[in-house]
Image (tube, rainbow, N blue to C red; front, side):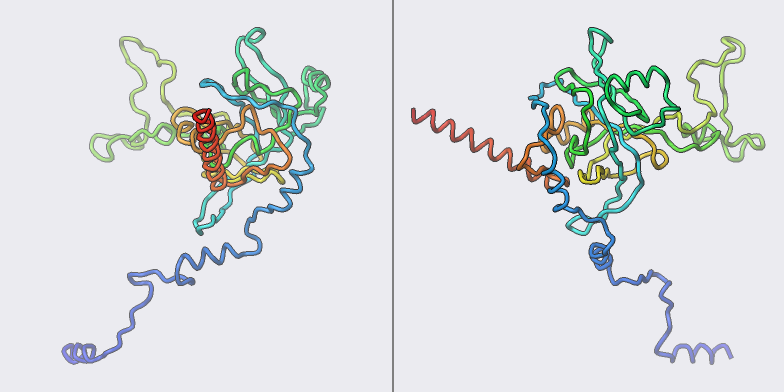
Length: 341
């Protein structure tokens, strides 16, 4: 009987193999078709270039003078509200995960000098808050500076040549698309955590010689007979939440939108939605990566009529190449004039 069944199975020519065995079938024939369809969606993000140009033309020329940076020049940063995360597809159909940050009512509040305060920095405030929640000292300071009641105040260290006047309002143009950013923000509340989750400890042995319910324990905390104290800054169980600060040192600025005051930053940023985020230029190696490729505005972006600066990282790099080409042509022309004389 078994032999007869085997013969029948061997004689069958068409064998049904389910699609889920060895391969995964999707609705779309390829990922490129899916990307192209997403690019053509009505509600996908699109830069409204015409509206942005009209908005830029209505602005007045800034009274800030351009600064030629020295080797130690350092620009100020600014504050923004984290709105959320989204995806953007570039010209080649590649998907980029970005975090959207809005710069809303961000002003310079105060300048700090070496003679008075012992260091150089700028006080920057963002947002609006009810007068009832403000202290009397802050209310008097805001009235003197002729500004509204600010939600959050932070300090940014910068050199004296990059100081900005009080009441100066920041825009997303302060940063150039394509540059790296240094971002610091608080994280979400996660409650009381053990040492393995907080500090990445490996834990104890899973079987031999370990007591029950001690596999994820901290281990030795201090010495018993000699010192008999727990040293300061010992890595132990602790609370993880908004008080702890997360620093992202190499996030790339993908795109800006000056019409809606938005920054599109690649990668995730810690914190809840509508939380205040500190954003400044990258430091160290991350700064040297884009220093010679992307043009930075010192001390900040100075608006001039008739000039439309780039809004994406690809356009910023192209503009940098064109600028360097023009400078090289001017140098060749001046050297030829000198030789003729």
